[in-house]
Image (cartoon, rainbow, N blue to C red; front, side, top):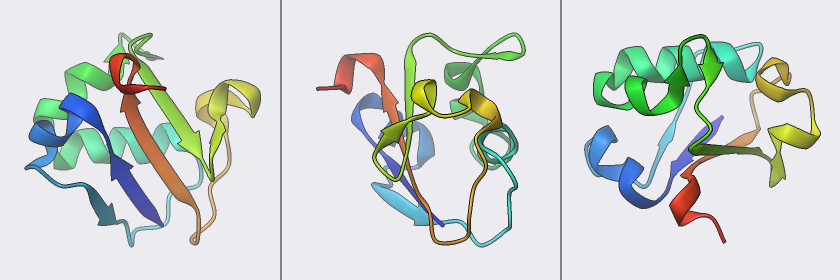
Length: 90
């Protein structure tokens, strides 16, 4: 799957605009946990305790996970996941 980063998230992931994620992740939660391990600076931005931070917007194939199944939204290998800070959303 492809993970795209926007706004001030990019410096936290080494300036990347996107990366291919080749490890299968069954749902958004496990993907975000894995991304936080790969990019430790991103970890604190993603989570407030065990909940997704209210300052983050996550889209799967252009749809907000808020309108899907939240962090339990299932993922497929060909999905596109966008990671936005709220202030970069439009």
